[in-house]
Length: 231
Image 1 (cartoon, one colour):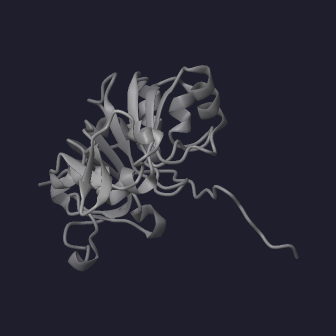
Image 2 (cartoon, helix red, strand yellow):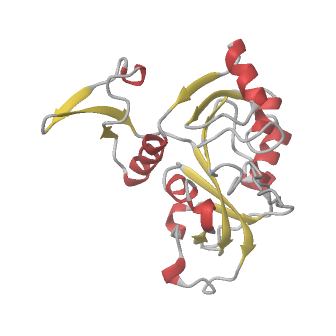
């Protein structure tokens, strides 16, 4: 089955206001840049975004925060975005901060078809308020629901027309588990190769999870925090 679409605009054409989106990436690596640009261009509003982080002011989800398209952020790290901070403190943006391991496992549970997980992270803290706590073998665990996302939007290094994906290095962090978890999964890739060119042993996301794929353009290779030694 050929799942290739022409570009990002075509890939996100049915994303409407108030949708819940998973967006891959870790720091500034593996972010679906083309799809985010297309979402900004389309102007959809009231979005709930599930992502490890909120990008920076002029890159990643930060671009959608600037245009007030995001209603709620569900993330584990948000420390590099001044506009995010401003909207949070002013009450314009609803925020749910989640331990990183819990965020990853709730994505994975959704992909595996599990309704919920139990985790020790957050027990006895504000995170646990209003949530079920169960004891297993003498230890308390907090119940967290699997995510329910309308779309998962990921970026890979290579892909083929069937939707098989290979990620590169740090981009392999949240992208694979999010690709499994969306009702509709959209993948943008740096290289789109013919079917059969990818080594099956190297594929990280099988094409069965991916509904649309396209070759992206004009990718940036940013460094979130540049650290150098004194000469």
